[in-house]
Image 1 (cartoon, rainbow, N blue to C red):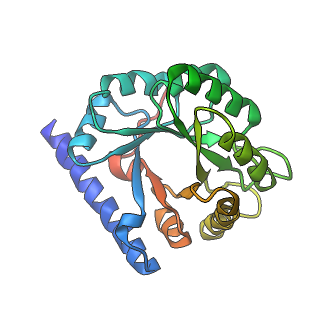
Image 2 (image 1 turned 120 degrees about the vertical axis):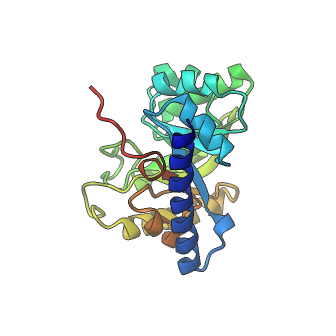
Length: 239
């Protein structure tokens, strides 16, 4: 376990250096960017080590992995983020542990999240997932609502009991006009965030950037970066 702690500590230090350098290059303070470590496919023991090393935000993308892990780590001072495509039949479980759902992309999901948050007596933070590869009114290849659908969905979240509109999230698209143009994609997300904050000033969270492109996200103005591989290592192939 000591070897694993040393490995994770070294990886975390390198990621911290990258974030700090990106903030400096962008003229931003390091405190303006929050690191979320994506722990999918890794065991609860790694989450415990990360907590010991000072990590406070962790993310998961599949409820069947996340629910038991969150239960195992319920004694830790962590904020859990759900970042995967979320089916409505998993909402009750996810609301049980997730502090923030970053992948809100349709009205039916908002309704389900609100119902379960009220039932559980919890307030759940929501990010609208923006699909920069989606056509007008459509959804993206990896989930998300098209940019022209953000305002309507945000208003629905803001008006739903048990939910808190926190901001926007995106994944750099693999297709469409922004494919391979991460900085432009994240810049577009920031423009949408500026528009959103005119109506919802508190919705100032912008989640963008992963292990390969966190620098571009920080340069564009992201407030949160989601890093998995660079901290935990290359994930084993499943199946």
